[in-house]
Length: 373
Image (cartoon, rainbow, N blue to C red; front, side, top):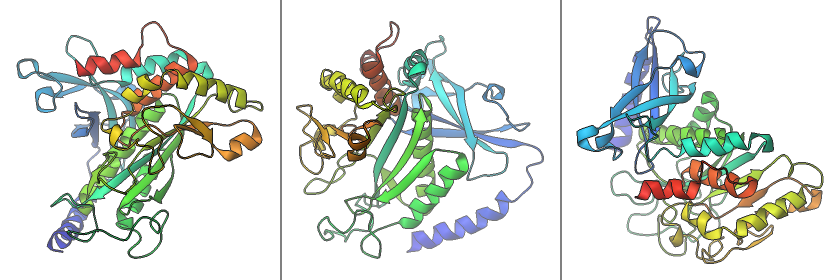
């Protein structure tokens, strides 16, 4: 309770400073992804309102402090690729998504966007749409326990929590609502939210987004979630199995649709794509998140990691075809294998590579191996 009061007091104090005139300057918060798959950021003052990403200057940071460079050659460069209205500072202030580059002109080994964008550009005529269902779990920042759960105990078994309403069924709805509004303000294509099967587990959906925008917008939505949770004094984890036992894990179900899939008769294209996915199951699993073996057990609405399966309306399959898609004969499919902690560039990249075809100078599996080396 002391912490909650302190947060409220600090928020009230901060508000009067956020109302101050910025004298024609704007603040650009540069955001990037570090070596552990977490977002980092720092702000800089710019002299005028930004109307195009090309107006944003390149910047740099100490990569030795983020696991992205050695100490004796630590400069890593930030190249802006997209920007969004800042829901925290508001006004003309912006959040800037950046790629990380080394000083020799090569992409940093944790920069998976660069290779993903090659594939998206090469297959732009496919008009591939994605929708990502990001599940996550809220934790107590002090002891790391599941937020709102009885200390040293457990709530009632799963059942009343999914899309639940009411005290004891949902926790921290204020955090979720704040995040929803922050995404809308920033222009993120957030399409919905819901409470998930495990209490204090939530989901937001981003999409449909075409091509590289999918990875960009999911990373920004994650950044906004962590910033909002920071203000409420709650911790967010994207771990796919934050609690062992008879509790659902957390995934990032990936919905996919090409132009040919969205046309009448598109079921044929969907079936062809699923056949291609079945032949590269191991390659996809390798890029579908760390500790995913703890989640993909064949239980708790998951398929087994060991084999590929698909079915209509089957949430225990690797890939699900929605019942409505089967009835209409066109639409999209859902890959249920990706974990909640995926890098969306790796997942959407290998999806395009498998479904639409590889290109000579991009290989998402080798891209991941390059990071691991």
